[in-house]
Image (cartoon, rainbow, N blue to C red; front, top):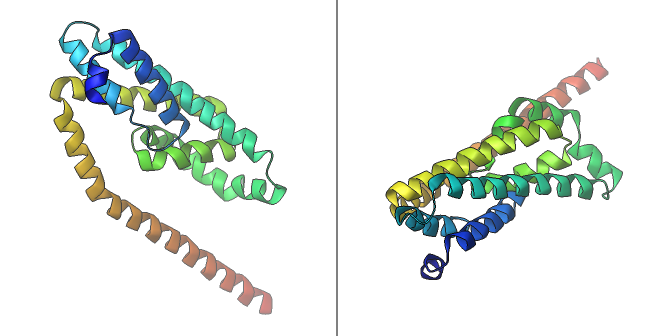
Length: 201
């Protein structure tokens, strides 16, 4: 695949980057958006295109895809039962998104395990469209800009090192999420016991 991409003209590589980044930005997992970025790194070295052009195409695809993913999640929620809508748009959800939503949207552009849930949850929970538009653009610029620059400067080695680092970090991240959920459930149970004790008194 990489050898075939290397043989394509720069315009087709830009279009490939745009399409794959668009699908990745929507929250579809398993999209190999990095492959045309690797091939573009070779084209940049050969003087066939520029780093700024490669970044612009990738950012446009990732950003527009994230906006469509948000809209699809929001429109899908409206077709679900009312009880599901109330859960997705609960006060607790809104409070979490107000506090951490911007950071989550930015980080999710780069961290694949977060991209799908954050994109869909932002749309389903009614996270403000204007804020999502700004944060997703910032996340796309950071994601594509940093990766395309690193691939241009260091090539496939940086990707291999990142994948190794991410696989080592994932168990710790999953453990932190489980601890957080357990802590929330524990607090909820304590609160319920307190309310029950107050009612009996």
